[in-house]
Image (tube, rainbow, N blue to C red; front, side, top):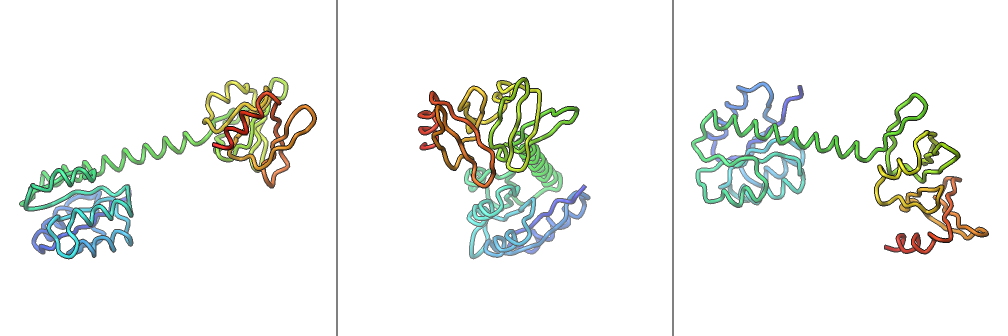
Length: 241
């Protein structure tokens, strides 16, 4: 397992030494750097992008709360643990979504609990990212193969007989799934422009009249989708939103 990088920000040398000692007792964490004020912390976070930041609140130049705000903007997934000799900043600290707020002198067991909270927060973020990643893909069975197609790569889906053809920027994938089944799993940017076409409206670059129907074009690709006369006004309205 990859060790989690920790930055310690504290202007008191004895406090930094104690926290450093505690971290070295644990195999899952490593110190990525130590600083003595908020300005140095911001610079080091930009450079190292640590998983965990230990921040003393009363530091010179830029205090810990203000520095943590900037660090969260620069590196939103960083887990912040505040350390301080006072407790009047607790509400402001938690408004920053801090993992924990430790009042000095910091007990070892209490510190270990805070680090475990930070680790759990990182694990939850990773799971959320994985879910979002999978949600951005369309799972399709084509013959005996399962394919995972990025939604944003899909130009349109076309019904052809009992099959559906998924047209992407670079390829066409054939599946026995119906247009209706696929439509349920696509985001609202896809619209049924025709009884046989389900189009990614974000990808349309031009629409032309063609006899009793309309044709949608998608830039450099030669693929063309159809838009029925019944749907053309609604398509124009959606594209204009």
